Image 1 (tube, helix red, strand yellow):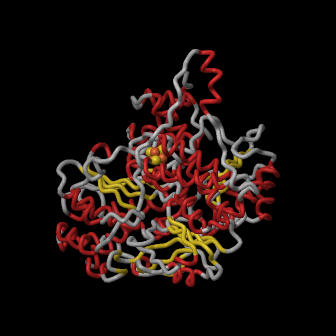
Image 2: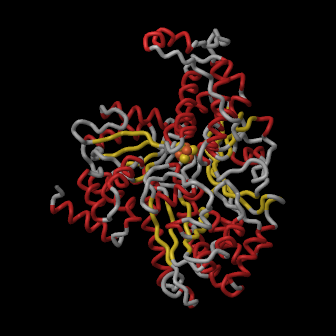
Image 3: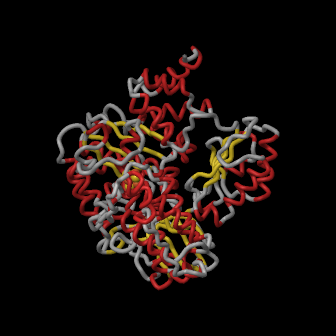
Length: 601
Ligand code: SF4
């Protein structure tokens, strides 16, 4: 039975989204914010009111980390738990706060006052330890601040009255280049594209050589061309869900370059005849929402969005949707599922999103940096951009650098810059390993520091994590194994089971209980997961373990048991022979032979 008060509140929330069932996740986020949970009554209301299966609503509540079926504490505190946060003392700070407040991680205190929990990277690694309190981002936590925080919680001081400097977020730009140095005046890129002609602007985007800045590097122009040549309804979606541990460069663009982002989306929208665009922004960046909405309002007022964009007679507008804590939603098709109000389960591909994307229609999906650079290309021409970078990787790339360096932050550098050059710039003179591309990326050691950061060599969506001699590579790989076991959406068995198994072996090794047989198991299972996983998350989940195993074998050797050559033997036939005799079933077990997996060269 839903109370009148609650049903009125829920109705108002649904009305704010035009009762559109595809906005279910946004509605659930609002309920979570208002009630500190999504109660069963709300689940039933939305199922009935939006005419969606109740399992879909309940599935969303269970799937997204920031939605909860039972109430959180009055103070809901999350500590960011990426490796770089841990290196800066994040885990120790979280443990100390939990101890001071007398709570278990993730469990509300019995008086309902507070919850302290760990969450995956919140995107503020250069100002670690970072976290969220009642959805507000705090940075640079210290032991002294933790003591103060516990006191503020016990005294019931509202978060709005906590020290303002705790919530200060620096832009952290260390080296800027053409992207960061150029602020496009609202409308200038759009008007330049229209004056040149939209098909001719598409030619420029193709000529620029711009590749998707999310890391995969698919040519932006080719994607736009595919949508341009596809008939029917179109959508534009922007992936602003950068959840890769160590990545925070889209944060800087969303905070300071929203006009450029919306300009790029609008050009793409007018080109293919789309009427609607969506920015899917990670929930941790919610604090930027009011500023982004202000920019959208100003653009509507200036005729750059709305019913008649720039006097073209074409309609195009943009809405912003927030994620709710699911790393897999950074995968394009999972993001589209989430935008449609479902769990972020990656779709079967083909067809690509360009053929069948949002709501089954042709969709251009690019990330924030790609749209910003596309707008600048529309203004300055393709040749300008193609003149930057190297032959097979054109332009500049924003890199977010964190970890063991004296100058963490944002570096805009030409693609083709070597790892060594970047390390010199960021003050990482004692680096022994660098992870390029985050948890899903590649880890390289000193002998490879002359490799290039580019699509042709070490590709990255932006994350660069630096580790010096103090760091235990086995433990770091263990942290990444935990990350993937937690973030796997569970849809396909190779990833669901394989990431759990890899986590188990990584724990065993880090605890000094592993043997060489376990190392072999990691290699074997890692290749199986890479070869058979349904989406990019699974395909990349074993990377950190496999790379560190290959490049730092001596560190793994140092963790092995004394009896390192111990090989566990277990005769299944002998073990079940008695049971077989009793039940009269004499079939012998046969080994299972799997077909050879697809393995990366
Ligand atoms: Fe989900 Fe992992 Fe399979 Fe991707 S690979 S669909 S994340 S279980």
